[in-house]
Image 1 (cartoon, helix red, strand yellow):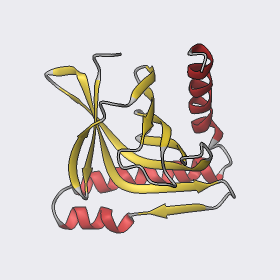
Image 2 (cartoon, helix red, strand yellow; image 1 turned 90 degrees about the horizontal axis):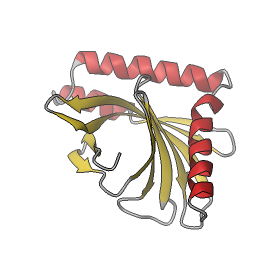
Image 3 (tube, one colour; image 1 turned 30 degrees about the vertical axis):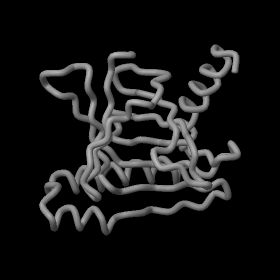
Image 4 (cartoon, one colour; image 1 turned 90 degrees about the vertical axis):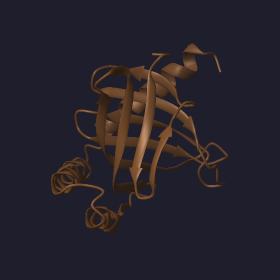
Amino acid sequence: MSDLHIYRRRFIPEELVHLKDDIIIKHDNNLMITMWSALHPRKDIAKGVSAYYMDLGIKVSKVYNSLGDIVYWYCDIIHTKKLPDDQNTIVFEDLLVDVILYENGSIKVMDLDELAEAFDQKKITESTIKDALRTLDTLLRIIYQGKFGILMDPINNAEADYYSSSNI
């Protein structure tokens, strides 16, 4: 796993970031779990653990503040791209739509306007918009049916395994 390179591509703002400091704590064909520190630390967001559900097109992040408290669970709608000539590089494209689940149980869907803006600017295709909306629907169904634990559990388990095996 150490020679695996992961990147995050955003469309708004347009950027490609090498996530070179992320620690990959689990990886198989359809799931990658990473631990990370915020690229631009803030008081409310310092670090987290993310699961990339590549087959679902969903990234779920458990986000912590600087005191180590869970702030919220943050979900991104993503596409996963492996570079054809480089099997050691994965690019996770952020399809702009986000869902935040707060500790008090409230849910917030965000950035649908950015999805439309990216289409207007010809940064994404109609097909990508349809994929993003269908994936958002799948994620919201999981949440509203009370099944979000199936996406949380692998993160919690990998995090616990990581800390117990490293004796931290």
